[in-house]
Every structure is written in structure tokens, then in C-alpha cells.
Image 1 (tube, one colour):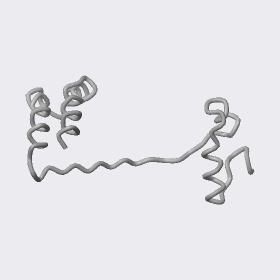
Image 2 (cartoon, helix red, strand yellow):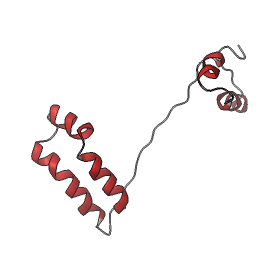
Image 3 (tube, helix red, strand yellow):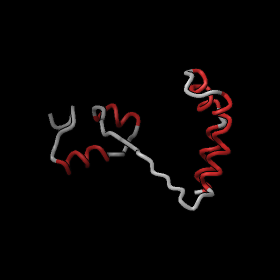
Image 4 (tube, helix red, strand yellow):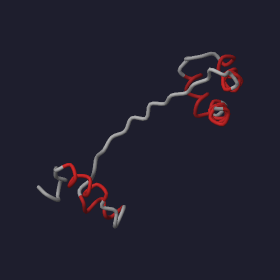
Length: 92
């Protein structure tokens, strides 16, 4: 948990986090600057727990376009075959 909290604390100090939070008025500068220390303190708690939601999606381009960017990787075709579907430009 400490390693994850350290990574989160480092990210919370960067412009990718601080900029939007301050620009959008989601928190004051004092609140944003307190986040890294709060994350590190949280990681030391015996009841610290972290869960992450990682949504994803699956899509594809026509085979010719895929092969131009990612030659010899037919993962999408094999997956579609396994699922019994079609890919545009392949089975249609």
C-alpha cells in the first residue's frame, strides 16, 4: 500500500492533477497541497484499502488499417472468431 500511495502522492503534486483541480475550482490550493501528505498518512493505517475500477472496451478498425499499424497481430480476428462474430471488411 505504501508504494501505491507514494505513486499517487507524486502524481497529486504534478500539473496534470493540480492544474485541472485548481482551474475548475474543485478544491483550494491549500486542500490540493495537503493531498500528498494525506495519501502517505492513509497508507500507514492498518485498515487502508484501495480498489480501482478499470473500465475498458473492445473495438477494431478494418483489417487493412489494423495491419498497417500492427502487422502480424491478429488478436482481434481470433477473438471475433472465438465469439462467433464478424469484423468489418473481413467476414461481411
